[in-house]
Image (tube, rainbow, N blue to C red):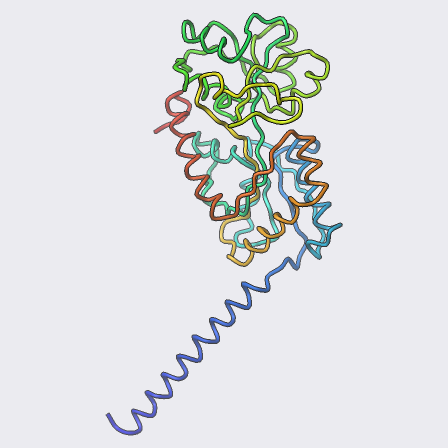
Length: 335
């Protein structure tokens, strides 16, 4: 190699090192400095006034009043398809950190049941925020005395009582009791289920004596418990819940090793950067420390259960495997 060639090779090597260093600095600067610069949309999969809408509007309000962000925040209601419409809307904005989807376990169920075109894996997990649990209730004068009593009846005859399920088979309300019954040895393929358009309609039917048992989120039972209009015989949490539910045993306490959480988190569109995820993960941690958030959890009877992006991703994989197996056994999903 000539002297001139050696010099050129040396210069090329220096330039290569310099370019790599500049690229690294650029990446690090982006990772440390990303923050929203445009208006932010919090997307929810139901109409104004629903539970997720209420939480989404709390997020929007606190983010602005506490100056967690410097840009306007609005809530976009995209109901329909059990969350499929909202997810499709979100995925138009690939890589855009200004769009946040407040949803939860339903995205896994939708995927398992083939209700959505885009799988849940195309969402970017940011954080899990809280868990809602399912309370199973009967009329005060029902001859079903407890969750254990219900299990014993259904072991003998899976069609002995009727269940009112809000919106569809396979959803979290369904999983909240059928998972426990299955764990206790009941053939849940033979239970007698009646589908209603909402939890309120299912509860009305039960109070009118048209069905025997209703499983819905525990928060839905609070006004009825205040009026002594129902008896909640089991909750789907790992341990007893506070407040109105402190005296109500879990399924585990009654011989059924089952926990079902209708967990609720936040997601971005596919393709978000690590810097964008880190910004929002930190913002939602701050949100959960505010009095507004803590008061909302009391109102919803929810339990704050923060998980960061990496942990949430792993948890979703595990939860999806369980949901899929459950739905396949009930012939509600294909293998």
